[in-house]
Image 1 (tube, rainbow, N blue to C red):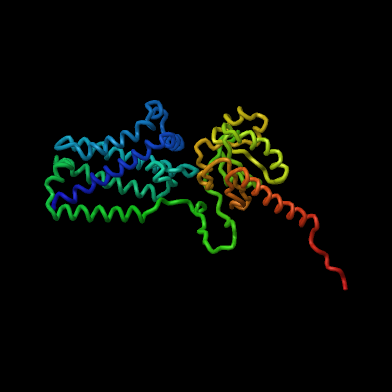
Image 2 (tube, helix red, strand yellow):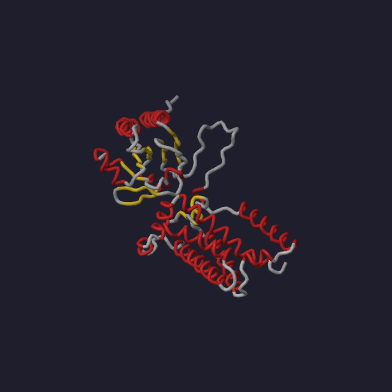
Length: 340
């Protein structure tokens, strides 16, 4: 039993590192993107840190469990340095003018870096400190596991269940404007307005925030892949949509950088935006392309998401009818009451 409590820090951190490393391996490009947004030193990209990081996490996790005796100190030291680095990176990210999407556990932990993220990492750093201090006893994980009695195994199992329940309850924090209202099944409305999510698109002058994009004018964003067969059809429909949706501005959002889409379709370069990491499309609830959403100037989604060319046409038709009705009401002006 006395050894059981000291098994919790290495086993907890080993599990977290294993999950984190495996999740990052599935989406290696996401790790590089997050590290770029975190403005980490260039030499890390030179040594291919985005590709090596998940393997490093898996290696440290294995060393924590397998190394015996004095070698266990090495594993504990590496773990302490790794989690200390994570705390520094997260604390630095909180000083940025814009929020950063966190890829701490790959797409499993996709959320925004907030103070909650920093608190979580500080707690994990404290656990790593306990691990480091205990490692000088030179008793590895496997050695202690072999020495557990029945009460020790029961205590360890209970602690594991408690941590799993806590992990299910605690959620990654999100900015208040990114919390979408619940939609009830018994509502009569086909569409319930939601806040425009926090995401960036790539434009001619660099990254542009979705909410700032819609501040100047309402926007219809049509997400499309210029490399697919229907890519040409989308481009052909653009002038019609632009005419019908006026004064709403219509943009084609490519799954590539803006410059790549511009080179493929220079004739519509002024109407192009890029979403190379599919971040905006994902945050807007579009699971495939082509798809479209309508951004209102009030910071809310005014229509969509619509998936497929047919649904996009229906969204354009509905929006165009509302625009025409609004313009007609403005032209008529207020009713004048006749004198009696």
